[in-house]
Length: 338
Image: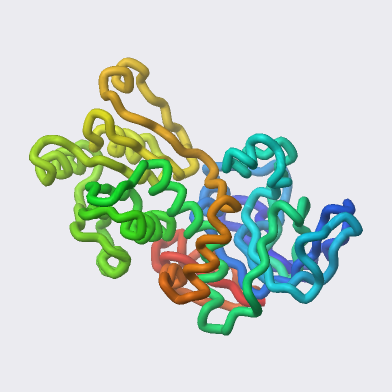
C-alpha cells in the first residue's frame, strides 16, 4: 500500500509502505474511510519536533474492521469503528479513572494517513458506531477521533460549568471545537481569541459570544477589561507555546481553571507566579476514549457538527498539499480520503 511518510521539515511523501498485519492477538486491522492532518502533525513538519528516521504519519482515523486477532471480542470484521491516537486496554486503574492516554499498556497509534491501519489493544481502543455513516457525516465522525475529543477534554479540564465565562486560546481545529464543547457544557459567555476572519466566523457558529484579536499581555488586559477586572472562570489552552500558556494562566480569576491540551513546546512556568495566582491547571494528552460513546451519539443524532472544521478535502495521495495548506494557514484542517 502507499501512505504518508515524513522525511524531514516540509518533506511529506506519499510512498510505498508495508501492509499492516496482525502482530498480537489483541490487534485489529482497520480499512480507513477517512483520516486527516492534525495540528500537532505540524510540529514535526515544521522541524520543531524531530524524528530520527522517516516516519509514517497520521493518528486520526475511522473505518471498517477488516481483521481481528484471536483475543479481540468487542469488535468484529465489517463493523465501522472510531479509535483514538493512543491504544489503551480500558481496564487498568488509569483507564478506569478516565485517563486512557495514561494506560499502563498505552501505545501510540500512528501511520493512519494510509489505506489500512493496525490498531493495538482493539477491545479497549475501538468503539463501533451504530452503522456505516453516510458520506456527509464522515467529517464529523473522524473529527471525534481526536480534535473534537481533545476540545471536549480542554473544556472538561477547565471545569466549564453552566453560566461560566470561558476563554479559548487558539483558533485551530481544537480551539474551535473547544468553543463548541464549552457551549455544550453550558458556558454563558465564550470568548474566542482569533485574528482570522474565517475562523472567527466558525467560532461564532460554534457558540462564541465575543472575539478578541489581541495576544500575550495585550490579550490578558483585554480579557480582564471584558470581565470587570476579575478574569475568566475557565480558560481552554489549545496551542502549546509559552505565550499561549501564560496568556491562559493570567486571564483566569483566582480559583478558576485552565484546561491545557496544546502539545507544549518550550513552555516554562514560574512556580512563584503560579503559587500566588490560585489557578487550577489540568490537561495533557486528551483521553478521547473516555468521551467516544457520548460524542458518537451526539454526532449520529446530528446534534453537533464538528466536521465543519474541515475546510479542505483531498484524496490521500495529495497529503503533502494538505500539510502545506495548514502550515501556511490557508486551511483550518485537511480531510483525507483514501
